[in-house]
Amino acid sequence: MITIGVDFHKRTSSYTVLDDKGLMITQCKLENTPDNIKQFLNKWPQPKQLAMEATYNWGLYFDTTETYVDRFMLGHPAKMRAITESESKCDRHDAKAIAHLAMIGYLPKAYIPTKEARDLRSLVRLRSFFIRQRVAIRNKTQALLDRNIWPSERPPSFKNIYCKRGIKWMKELNLPVKERFILDELLKSFEQLNIQIQTVDSYVETTACDMPAVKCLRTVPGLRNSKIHLYTILFEIDDVQRFPRARDLIRYAGLIPSEHSSGEKQRTGHLIQRANHALRTALIESAFSAVLADKHLKAYYRQTKERNNSSAAIVACARKLGYAIYHVLKEQRAFRPFPPVAAPGPFAV
Image (cartoon, rainbow, N blue to C red; front, side, top):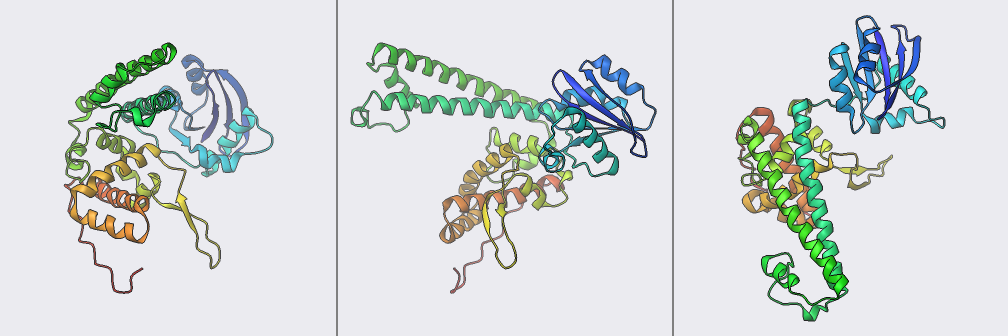
């Protein structure tokens, strides 16, 4: 089988072609145009496989080349870094390393979602982008008020300055001319972002409301009245069958602690960093609602909080919620209530 390794960049890509014995046939660099890529791939006889490292725009290359190769492999960038890092960084060498790893079966593979799944995932990530912008504007507004208004001079009738009364108060504030201009622009941006977030919410709901998995997830505590977290969880997981066990999904969401153990020393730290952060955020924020909606999960939260702290307890609840979501999606069924929490024994710590 012919193996083609690609070091893909925005304007050009480096290629290495190996035969079935691992001997290099050719190396070249091509401009990234659909015609160039198709002509190059059609030069090589069947069967052939192509491997590349996942980049932010890998989907464009995949959609262009999928029908021209027998097998397409996408390398996991974080795992490949540990294998291919060297003091001599060169696109030609990277393409060669990718090709060799693919040929011997050692390429750490990343999941390849469908075009529809990628588009839906982009929608919920766009909403997260708008949310982060809105948070930044709120922080900027708070900083402006802190440098112009004493806390004692603020109305005691509301804590959130972005409630209706708070916005009305900010619009009527007597500030220096330049500060007044900045605040007005911040309020305009805040209102515009609210409109954009609502538009994305409506579009996501109308696009995905007919999916069978949505009905199953609506039975899970914390997701019954969810506007966007349900769709974030669904789109980020995509195909739950790719996770052999529920723990694999929990690891993918980054809800397990990092571990540094050696010999007799057992040490655990913060949550692992190599994770799907959008999925982790959605599960943790859904856990707050789930704790209020399910009495057994609430008892588990209280018990865990007594042993550790509130942050650790809500992460533990998010982990429990993730296990439930895994089985609901894999078995395509409604949520089954969490089991009652056993009361701690007299010597429990």
